[in-house]
Image (cartoon, rainbow, N blue to C red; front, side, top):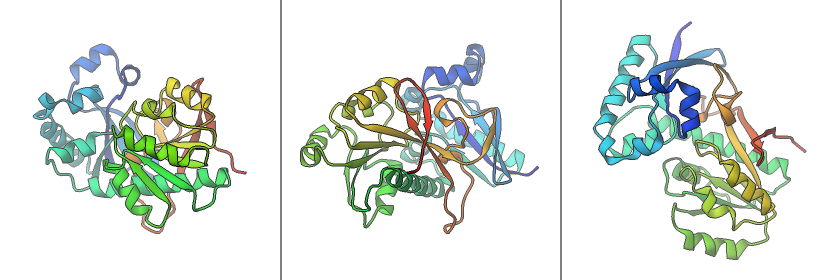
Length: 283
């Protein structure tokens, strides 16, 4: 069974860390990737590795010296198992890039993820009978994935708001209040709570941020009459399954490559405030 890729994830929330490993194990493997699973996508296989470090620690300036070490450890693993690629979850790709740490597959994976977002966008628009000229708002427009999504959205009716620019967001909501819009959430974890209270019935949120929106964020959206969908990933199997809202799929950042002409088999779920995942249904 040839291994095509190795994938490194981290727990964006404490409950993810506890699902990944025992607490004593977390302390032992800080910054050291450990094998936590295997996945299969269209007959190709990848290995899943994890570190117990939370997102705040990955972002911290004092962690900068650990990042090249982490990349080197994943490169050594890739060589050891004979895989052709190594890919990373969440903020790791943009964090590596910000610190000048190169990985030949970062740009390819960024483009693949952006393609998956547009595929999910089309599915959600089709589900709600929305026309191609519906207004689309990208949250976190200058971000690592968002900038590529906006590039691929050329020809669509799109606007973007960068993380923290709440004044610009309020101008947008004043212009479109009451109209159907699709909001693609590509900003940082937890930031959706800053925007949710300003939405209205007819707003559809499509989330690609890891981890998925919290129950409090989804409840606020539901109270405003908005709906929230989550990109679980692409079709495939994992053992053990990826946790929580990614269960039953392979996260886009872990996906093995597709040819430019192949449609990406993206899986989308509706999120509810009680923590349930509701499969997307087509009209």
